[in-house]
Length: 404
Ligand code: NAD
Image 1 (cartoon, helix red, strand yellow):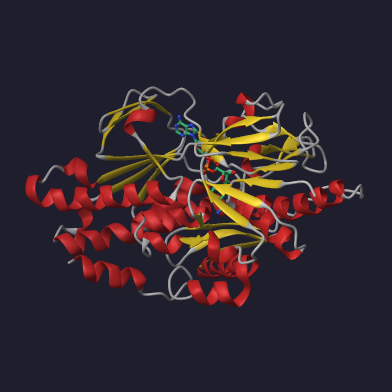
Image 2: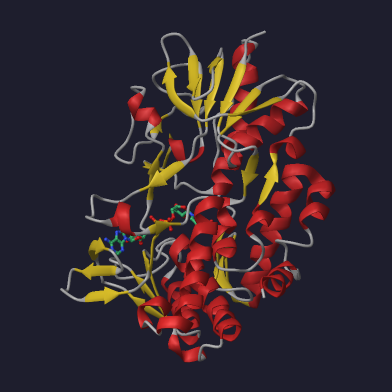
């Protein structure tokens, strides 16, 4: 029996592993951390909604069959000639590999962004952003430097917009906690394009903008960031914004390992795959999620969690078919909706073709959490996370109380 290695335990990798478990097919899943992180909810973790550690689940809780093996290691290269994934600790020979190594921030060569901005891309960076903001508010009590209470978020895609929504609800709490007048903080979202949330309709974009502006967020479209230095953002209009917290959410590109390993990649570093999610360069390598350039109506699919999960399911079935000289199934993406939270209680988005906004959108978004936890581990996983990330929790309040 050939060996199966999954590189990456994000949404795609985990879903593929669960399918192999169902099929009683042993595999190794290699991941940088011992846990799976809920990346799509990181804005909540960074924005103070619940405890940061609530946004992860140990892989040993997800994969419970004796034959599956979780390796905590970081893949640094792919040796296609000898069919090995090379980790920092050891090598992983494969007959079939699934590359599900996610994405990295896209900086577009903008000077200073790498060094002087923070990015919301992992549990660690969410914790870093959250701690940094809290420290700024605490330090403001000592020196009254107004830059400490200013947050600039570059990019108004889903990540940037969901994050400023969380901040709008959280920063007033920090003001209370540190005895700072509530109107003294400022949140700006700076977007180069004419609109926010380009994935949604004009109607929903306008609703989102109204809701956020109603919560005190300054939304600045047609405003391009051209340089970032320590505590300073430079705009194309020559304006300079001084802020102690600068977060970049201006886009993503695929993990660079694919290009380095010689796979045929698109402009965003995504490896081209055929209809079965199999690399066009190597029939023993399948590429999914943010790493994969799967063309649908002539364009690559967007890098979203729902598509990565669907790809994980298809790819596992296809590898089992390929191994057994069976027939593989073409991947058929189903975009079930797109929902953006705008803080803790409201949101906007599409459920199927139905537009929703306000509290119903927020409830729909919470239901997607329950659905995902169900996929991950049924009732066991839902009840494990019920008191934390799913609506109605008080873990954040407990944490705030224990901080004092
Ligand atoms: P994105 O690419 O969707 O948005 C980045 C935004 O930054 C764009 O609107 C772009 O115009 C803007 N931008 C780029 N350069 C700029 C500059 N110099 N100055 C100002 N603005 C600039 O990135 P994202 O929000 O990180 O999302 C990445 C992917 O992940 C997307 O496909 C998204 O759909 C997906 N995602 C999904 C969810 C969800 O389903 N809830 C949440 C987060 C992200």
